[in-house]
Length: 139
Ligand code: IDP
Ligand code: MG
Image 1 (spheres, helix red, strand yellow):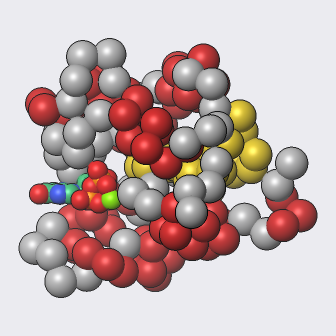
Image 2 (cartoon, protein in one colour):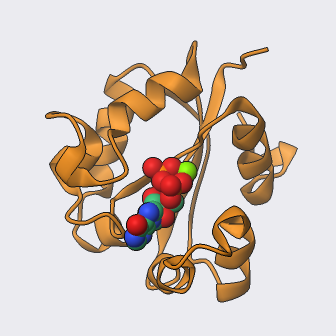
């Protein structure tokens, strides 16, 4: 079953570079509605838990260092076919390979500091949204 929600983070590089407002505008202009939104900074433990699936990968420690290096925006987004459509507007993990006009093409510099996260499945969208937001924080 596909759901109509996905989860995103605007990562520390994009926040530090002053791109968060333009990225949120890009997301809403693409038809996504913001259901929940939070400006926060992850601890090492929280970033490690969020990316637990990558714990054995060689870039795991760098990923945790990067994701805790500054504040992020976390959000739950709603749109028909949200997970797949959002992966399309953010572009490939490596910004060098991201299609022109995608968020990573426009705002990311490298494969590790790649501006934005988007859930890769409906199941993970629900898990990731629940990691950041209670039911009282969704509108
Ligand atoms: P995704 O964010 O496009 O879903 P994943 O493969 O799930 O990509 O990787 C999670 C995050 O880990 C990426 O967004 C990126 O920040 C980082 N990452 C992925 N692959 C590499 C790599 O080869 N080197 C450094 N960082 C990486
Ligand atoms: Mg992923």
